[in-house]
Image (cartoon, rainbow, N blue to C red; front, side):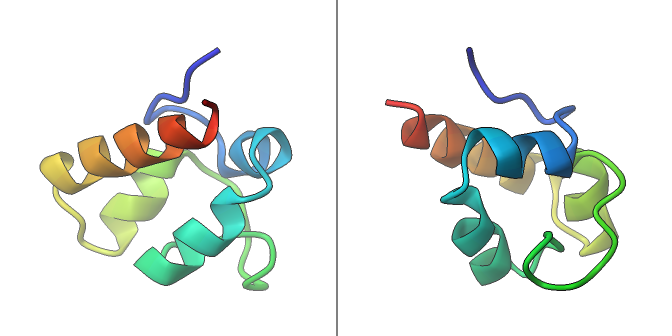
Length: 67
């Protein structure tokens, strides 16, 4: 299994609970933050004006949690 930018936030948080802290530190909405969780990691990051390169870094970082 690997994380991709198209993963839904709900699925990401379910698969990697540690991702909540990471997402919150980056300013990306998540379940614990109390914002709606609908949408993908990419959509949530773009709403916060992160670039494609930033999103690639997030995906790389989150995949490290799987190891």
